[in-house]
Amino acid sequence: MKKTLLACLLATALSAPVTHAADAVKVGFLSTLSGPAAGLGVDIRDGFQLAMKHLNGKLGGLPAEVIIADDKQDPNTAKQTTERFLKKDKVDFMTGIVFSNILLTVGKPVFDNQTFYISANAGPSQLAGADCNPYFFNIAWQNDNVAEAMGKWATDQGFKTVIGVAPNYPGGKDSINGFKRYYKGKIGDEMYTKLGQLDYAAELAQIRAAKPDAVYFFLPGGMGINFIKQFVAAGLSKDIRLITSGFAADEDIIPAVGEPMLGTFNSSHWAHDMDNAANNKFVADFEKEYKRIPSLYASQGYDAAMLMDAAVRDTKGKLDDKAAVRKALEAAKFSSVRGKFKFNSNHYPVQDYYLRLVHKDAKGRVTNKLMSTIFTDHADAYVGECKMPK
Image (tube, rainbow, N blue to C red):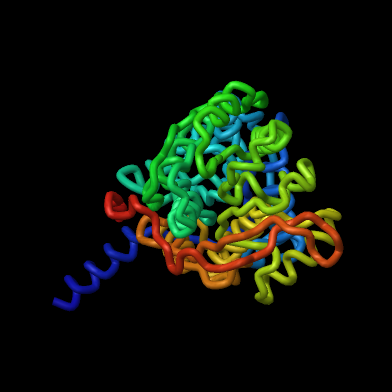
């Protein structure tokens, strides 16, 4: 009997996977670093790099190599670079992608390779719901969420008719759907523009003719800069309220537009004037390092690095133990710049969403000011569809 028990124990020991602490950590950082939307990727990169500086170039105490590449906002380029990251560089984590269509293109090879992807921005509904994946974590938000907050605020303000404007790609459609989910008034029209479009004369003519109470728009990067400038120049801001999510009214857009942004209400999960220790350090050091106010994109890049750091630390560097890394990521034991933070069962955040107003601060800068809380502990609408694989 003793012999049989000993044999069983020996067989179990031999069949158990052997894990070893890694000597270093590799991160594949793929983002949009050129073209009209480059500012978004640059902000995510700079936030991530600032975190790495705060961590002395290490993740979980291990030396870290961050390999940075430009996807050029092109799915084919992103796919080719991802293959290199996975096969040649053998990265432990990936992050950085701005746009949902690009993330959906590279997701399958990343997940099939059992490589953890930490999204510092793109949050498509597919990966929140039926296609949720144990190797995908979103540190930012689900695409609909920030728009949902603005939809609730628009309802509370009593706007009777709102027109929606967004690019014709998954992130744009998610944003309009999110706004409609909580807006109880009438949607006058849904205008889906080309991704990267910079001339909005036709859309502005339609808006003028429709005479809505407000226009909700989701146009990140150069798209938003041009839309706001053209909207104000056309005189539409005199009679129609312009409202948006933080993606089109943040510190990447405000300096390029200037005073026409004043009075713009927007929703976000983060603000640079949030008063907590992690955020105060992040904002002060970002301004010192890069000579500009950080955007929400930068804050997400920073948090992505800090989440990786916590996972490597809590697994004692045993990155080949995928179950342990997943458990450590799910625990999210790091100090987020937005304060409290936790993941839902689909690996998307449960968090608060806020109303911000573009104003002039005490230094005379046109920037955002935190106004109030719209949602507390808000989860996405798709989590019930997620049957997360074990």
